[in-house]
Image 1 (cartoon, rainbow, N blue to C red):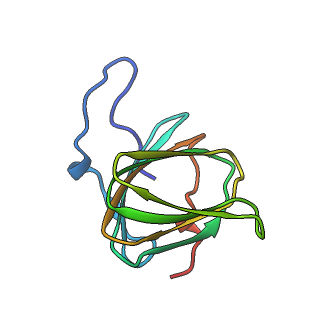
Image 2: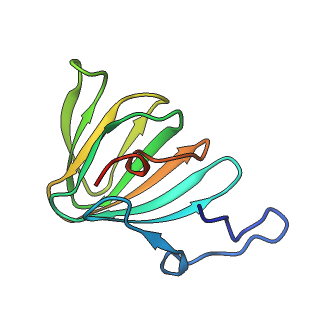
Length: 125
């Protein structure tokens, strides 16, 4: 986890390209900025990337900046499937099962609160 560079006393901007990146699963590159009560992650998915269905305690907002994805959201057996494209946003309440497939190269800004593990952190490659 990368600690935030900013502080309430002396806030300073941070450049996304300067943050360390990781590749927790194939075809996915991620940069994270973690604060006390929130996590922001810039997630780049290459076409064909599959983030397996999962759930987490953190509430999540996914702001899709570009690309095209197919989401499955909801309890097993009751999931809904829908596509998202750039400039769309999705709210995922705490513990709601979800997964996503990149239908083309995609960039998503994920916001999680409280900060914690993301679904790809426990997904096997």
